[in-house]
Length: 354
Image (cartoon, rainbow, N blue to C red; front, side, top):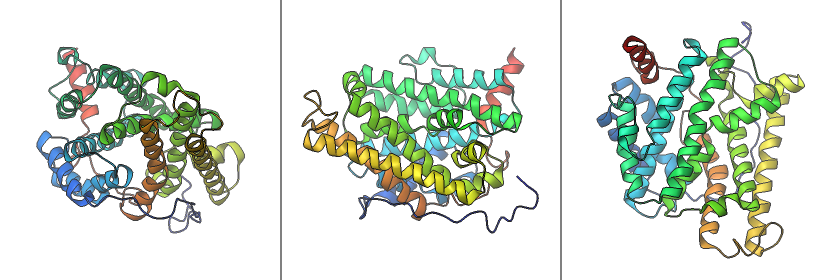
């Protein structure tokens, strides 16, 4: 970041066009408290400063925006815990490039993937609170889901874990990706697909493997993943700049096209609007039975619920980012004493063991 950058004026924030109205459920504040208690109890957030930091993020309230149709208290609580876990893991993972090489980051991703194993005997490093807290979630999820659904969740979570390799490389090399590379990495690194799938759980549905591969659903998942990533990187750009985070799609646009931040924020907003409009068009095709909609999905209540999940992530999720959390405005990052990075501890202790 240039030394003469004026942090009080970085760019004009664009107007993001969102579906009017509000679908937010009323149980968000209650879930805020519940997920913080889970994180404290399991050791995911071991200090008062880290719990205060995530309390201001209001992750339970996010769940009320994006999963207002959660079918019962149990499922929304498991969903809230899983979203909290992903946020904490993501914040740890974004630090890895400052102190670890590629082999160490790969070791972390490989280990984290084992935490989603069907058999706990296949899990590594269950001494870590991050692993134990996920296993608590996993046992609750297993009670309500099919093996094929969990297989998809494992694949999507694994892709998210491995995306830390690319993010760490950008920090280590002080580079910004090209647009093609940046889009591929960022869409996965935002954990969009795994988040959509966990929202299925909250809403009491499971897409079959055949439905996930259906052209309309596959495209809807892709454009929703893109839309949420573009919005996230616009809203969080100032915080990323001040923290030295380089895996941001606005910076990728700037690398590709040149120009100042205002130019590229505007380009990113256009990309968000294009993706959101395409999702709306796909939803219309399903509702009226045209275009990519065919007999395999027509009139399916499960598909109808799933498309609403995607719409809620794209529109209601952005409303939460803009109105009800400081996560994307705050430039604060806790010290390692305040928020011990368990991924770094995993590497350190495994090195010692070797």
